[in-house]
Image (cartoon, rainbow, N blue to C red; front, side):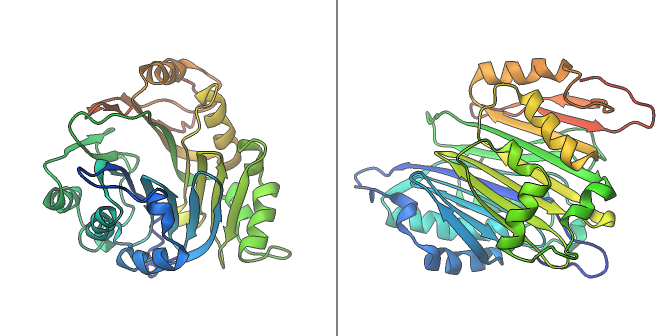
Length: 340
């Protein structure tokens, strides 16, 4: 993981998800982006200033654990999250070039992030959301952008969306972004006596912290403990992925949890995550073009089991080229109060 001097580490990730379809008059390579191996992605990721630590695969996808977060590769979809002072959007021109080589074209591109903890440390093209939008618009037709959540809160969510006209595919994703975490809970993610660095230590941490219980059965897990602290995890089961990234230092503590699984109840999933990390402040973002899931998730915001001791301070949603982005912020109160 990158360091940012004595200020702290920039845990909140930049996230890019790109879907592809067959290019006109082309015959796509059957495995699409999965035809590229680890050696290719190692070179590709230099533009984003991150490296590969380990990887897992199944019938549906390849998952790479990075020095700064994660990369998921499907035949016609790429999901990449990078933290720190990485330059994630600088991979876009090469990604478009490789898509063309594979006989594919971009059908949908979504870029999102919460607020940076140390925005003054971010390099081009990430010094502001406006700069990020302009950079993406240089390669694509004008996309749509939104900023969700109350001004002045670190949980504020920035979203950019570009879709090929008429393109629509099933999409569901839930992201939980947690800030100012419980120091006792965060001690589990420091290297200490009996705690190993790397994937062997990461596997033990996944079990001991209870994270394994959130993933279900028959899941392939790839986890990594950083030295002196920090933890990252990818998991795959069929075409479903999970990813968790933890920055435990008190002055910049941050945890992200993300999955494209469709839980029976979002409230149960969120409550399980909160019980492990105990944040003072968190945001939940749900991206879906299935209205039933959207309505269900919004109705569940009245469920008191989601966030015991938390109060919803904002609930907002927006349409983005056929996608819907509900957004909830929930800071802890000194006097226990529940609006869930």
